Amino acid sequence: MVDRTYPRPDFLLRKDGVCAVVEAVTANPPATASGIPYRALPRSRTEQEQVAYLQNEVAIRLGSPLFTKLKQRYWELPHVSGKPLVIAIQSFHAPGSLMISSTPLGHYLFGSRQKWYHDEEGRLIISEEPIDVHRGTKEIPSGFFAQPEAENISAILFCNAGTIPKFNRMGHEGKYHSWGVRMLRYGTCYQPDPNATRPMAFLYEVGHPDELGETWREGTVLFKNPRARHPFPVEWLGASAEQDFVNGQAVTTFAEPFHPYWSMTENFKRWSLPPGRIKRRAQQMIAALKEDFPD
Image (cartoon, rainbow, N blue to C red; front, side, top):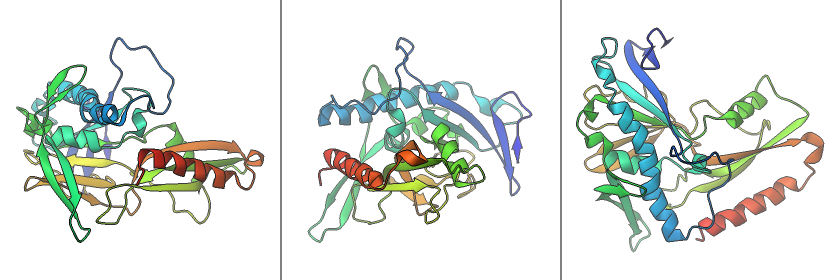
């Protein structure tokens, strides 16, 4: 049950005898930035610049609103005290920000990033590397969950798909299906191969009878605070994936077989999508992915 009785935080959730509190926030452009139409991430960055952007500037843009919410001290409110508290966040900080997965946020929250290699037998070996600070347009300390009083924040819920295209897809798959419209969705998703270091590509037609229906939780990630004063029960919130930090290592558990990292949705009039258009779109996407992931 969703309870909106109180003016802040945003709402309370009640389920299975547990009551939790949710505050939602967005990461927005700097105050001096002008509005820019949504587009893909700039291609002008070199690979090194793009890595630095993801590791530092994205963490700063996501970390700033989270730190602001931490200073609100919601846990001192009578209706919040003693309950798990989660901050839900989605990023609109720059053009193309919805194409960024949850990975930079996880690095910032836990203050750690993953290093990997394949051993002589081809097995993937992962280790953790601590992060002290993120340096970009400004400098912030890494490890949000380790900050003073952050133990009062039980978890951070991330989503990069809570936008109009998701509502369009869900409606087109269900009772609001239109025979005059065709939708293509494509992007990257979780690769179930335990030795994989790259995501899988996907493309499908929304509403096609052979495709599984999309869920509201699809693509959401719940980062659980290892120092939480009031931890969330496992899978209680219903996120598509949960990430814990256990024995110094990030561990992700998936609740659904399909977990997209990012996606794009294109709408067409039914008569303007001739046979072969889907194949050409797939070829274009594969070519673009090869540019980002040559191997």
